[in-house]
Image (cartoon, rainbow, N blue to C red; front, side, top):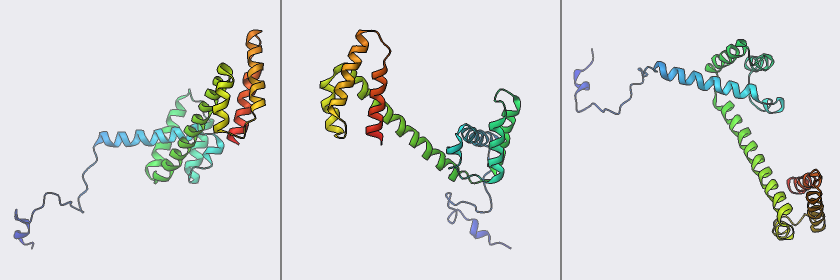
Length: 181
């Protein structure tokens, strides 16, 4: 028989957790978790083959994702397959998958930021000429001043003759090749 004194108010700490009793998870919370797992599954389905290989998936989950990628997205089977992927994820550790997806997203964000920076540099050279070339050369000494000036003159000439922006595109490719690699 238990000692009733162990339940006295003095011994009671309202912050104690009962290890034997877990709080029941509400139905709404279960739905949120299920939607989150399904959302992760949809992110996996939308990845390219190369990126999908970097995600730690077991064989069953990998096969389910591969099947979802083959199903026509407008059909109801695709939605059901996503639900199935979410169901499979309930019995798996999501942290490694979420970490790998976050890493891919971070790499994509860095890549986009770099391309925006290159586009701004290209636009500045095309619009301002030498005044934009000088700061760019101080930041990236591997660039060739003469080449940048040549691109600027070609862009001005193309714009004055209403020709397609061939030099404008070539300038971007030159910047991308010299700065990124």
